[in-house]
Length: 83
Length: 83
Image (cartoon, rainbow over all chains, first blue to last red; front, side, top):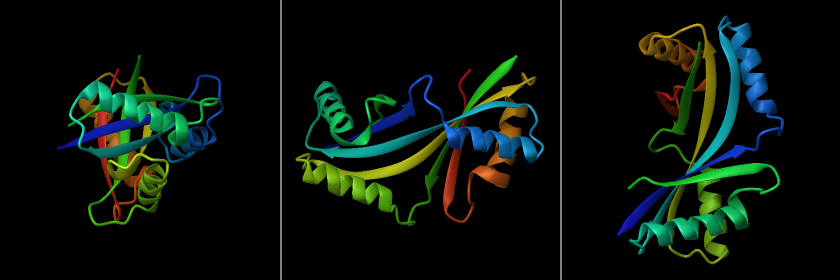
């Protein structure tokens, strides 16, 4: 059985987000003047085989975040089992 | 009033995703051998001022996707009003 997990990695509050800021500027220049702010995030959708228990899967994905996917100095992450 | 919208931009089926593939390889090398696939996506959280009607907001964000955020040749996008 395959479980699919979505990991959303975003910058911590207070960390500058140049991609989001520049996207906001570009949208304003294109005429979307009511855009107040843009924040950029990264999402990974990970398919994991052989585990069925949601808690065990979440624990494993948290290990992946700690070891590879996120930088704890600047990133917050959210894990949600989608299927 | 401010409405917050999340736009998730992912690659269309059949478009190669080198970031996802390399993340999968790295996770396997780190010992997470039950990772079957990884797909990478980009999310923008956009705060829009002055509009209250959800349909009007969604329509405007769709215009943003067409004009700037997504490339229709390779990307699919999903818009959801979160607040």
